[in-house]
Image (cartoon, rainbow over all chains, first blue to last red; front, side, top):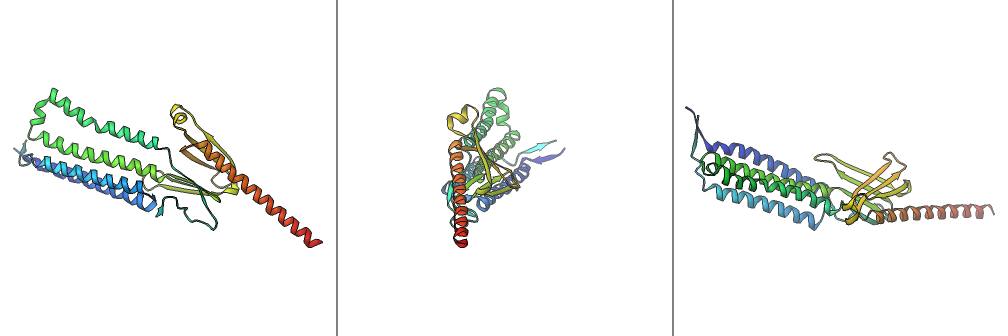
Length: 74
Length: 193
């Protein structure tokens, strides 16, 4: 009988989050290195970062209500 | 790093005439697609409520779906931003001396081409389809006598006005050249006399 905690989901979540961060940084690098800076580009960057942070905050808040000590039993 | 409206490697007496990007409708169409994709988790949620409600109260499956949804929406936002970056980085610039084509073809793939106005041989515009006609955008093709023989301005607004502007520029260049040749010949004649 093998017991695996569901908090191992966080490993997969963490990897996906790392990928998100890498691609976000690449996009921001391209925009500021090669783009023609304007109010629109700053506004879009602000909205992107703001919504991303908001989404992570919502994930955190809703995640607090989940019991992460539960286990899979095989 | 340039500011909007700035000319890359600006030459002396060079002025900006046109600073073009794709029509905003192209970006909005891509965003609409991603918005529809964002509704998929909502649809699945309501499907599960009616068909498999036990999944939403499961202490092992629900947390997995929760984290999966979080990542899904993060990537939707990323793709929305990426669509904007792709739109924003494709630029076509027409100055009094050059045409510059800057295109971002995916990540880490950028093509910058430029050609002087004197080498422009032919300019044409095409506008095919209902949306392009209604919103007045299309493709401008510039034939040049250079290594890159064709510049294409894709999905730019007011393509026929762009053609008129470039043709006017070419004509002015030819008139200036004629005037210069006339001046040189006149000067040579004076010297002989």
